[in-house]
Length: 314
Image 1 (cartoon, rainbow, N blue to C red):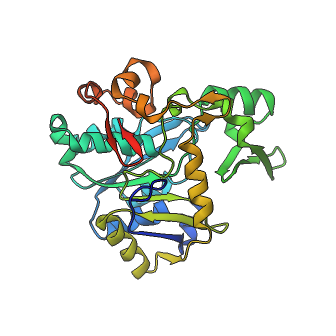
Image 2: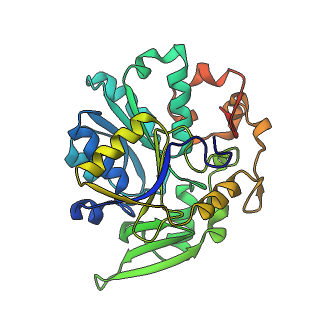
């Protein structure tokens, strides 16, 4: 158990070899490639993902084909209650489900898996892919107030957003060219969601495999393999040639970033210490996205918090 990164079997850098994936997906394309490989290997038959509309409003989606997985690729910075599609998977008869989400989503998944109250969900769920996350952003604050009103960038003109130590916005201009805008994350802290304050998990410690970019070279993903299922899938994607992997460039930098989230500051606001983070506290109004939006965790929210490793299990 790494006190900053959680349990893992392997840490490496990975990158997709598929040009279609690289054009559509975020940095490196590892998440999309793993899902495509999972479909080929019949490890999964569907995936809970997030799509977006023209205004960059996040929309939860159930992808049931490799084409849909590719369509929904890429980072969406606005909140979306991806777990609400879990019921759709059950209703449509899908039994091998992958769920891709930030640490708050993987923690919610873990609670569902470990609770006897949600057996119908546990029987469907098979694979958790976590996304590194320092904080999520409020749509109204980031897209409407900051980008549209202050920076005069219409959300509908944003082609792509990258976050790696800073936020990089790729805007399609009136001349049909790409303008690149870079912003300090410190400048954007005030637009982060209130629900991020009690979260100390940067690297999605409850996932089967966690993906980000910190610690890797440009264009590559940092991949943390945590379970046998995650390792089997990664090894299969590498063996098939869909992914390539190499040694991680800077593990210490990754650990330093993870350590930042376990401190008690996020911008000018105080982060709740782990001992204060309980499910009752969240239920009372903190509002970590999927915990409150999904409407399927109410019995779990009444249970006392349990310490596990370096964080509190909500």
